[in-house]
Length: 598
Image (tube, rainbow, N blue to C red; front, top):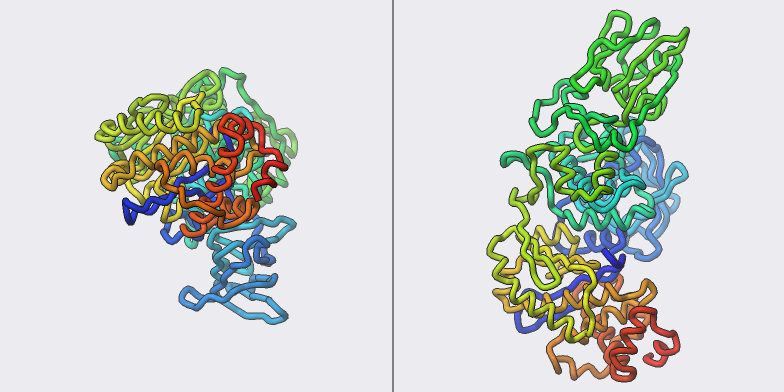
């Protein structure tokens, strides 16, 4: 992705004769979640518990400042009421106490929809997705319903490291998606938690890794691991220590699968083996084990009783009793911190009243080794090659159909599709790209990827697009609804010309170039000649146009914003000429010039 801004081409598929193109603006994480929440269609979602390890007793609820549309229901079938003021939600045993405007209501659960901010334990987070709050044993359970791809993006940003590059991030995204959808996580009221028990998810800003995580999730949207026609289990860890583990070494009841062997990892060990040492008192160990019901206080000796094929300890001996090592590690992690026993590959020796642990690696060691994957990507390996290394025999395929993506080469772009017949559309896509280049005077430096999804729901799940969207462009990546649908309705050329224009414009645009100019240029160059000669005045001023382009949530609002952007861009081109306007696209338009258009 060459530019963090994105544009989505919108069209009405109801009538081939009346095509309206527009865009939804910049898909920051929160904006994408907001669009998913307001779109009339439903997207594939996951219910994720928020702030799992805090077990908060109270949270403060505030309607978000940008959108005073927060709705609350006190039961699943109750009518919704609008929340305009701050409220407190407190756990009252297994019920909820909702405190607002000096009144307290006791409810079983609370359902929230709209933009809201939750604050607790010194942390606050603004959410745009549906939220359910319930209570168990005096602690709140906050559950956020996230689109699958939003979840994947957040986890990749949270779990990745500074050594990662795009190919290792893409590999991680596929593993994260596979794990989320096909592993049993053991939660009754939600699908996944946000702790390392499932996959770590930070709710706050993703910072520097956010844009790259977004790109990795989008580039692999809907892709999961498969093995012999069945969806595969997928795991990952920070550092395997030079050898991966089989699932049964970590989880004794795990079934044997050939694509998750214990095997040497030269990519992990090649950058230098990682070792660790930890010293823990017997009192600390005894307290942690007793708290988790694993060993009664009073024991004296601790030793490794059994090891697996990778050399990892699988069973400990506590005096005469045996204890699974992974249960031991989880108990120590939850009680004393995850850095105390970071893996099960260790030796243990008693020194007086303390125990010394000497080990290597970090995490369970099963499946993808993030350290090794980062090294492979650094040395030029692709995401497919990385996953082939850590999941031998498994393949990457579409989550819904199990089909592998096929790739067709065009002029300056590659088409990815699940349908082998889509290669027949290459000639028309070549023509659309040539028209985009001729009309704009721009040419792409990097190749463009066009991914044609196999169905409209699959396209919407991948892009979080609202109902009127037929195609999506972000940087040098274009996603579309099935090409056969666009072709049947005679919209393929116009749609793809429009999308190629977006890719060309976004590659050239400076970070401070206003949205109205980028969108407006695509509108002017994308339409059939003389189609908009009736455009005599804008529907809104430049500032309102930029705001509407970024936040429109209906087709009519989006169309009005794009009509205004087209008006201003057309005026600019007529007054100053294409070459000058392209220069401003690359550097930013002078304020005086923009003011002269108002």
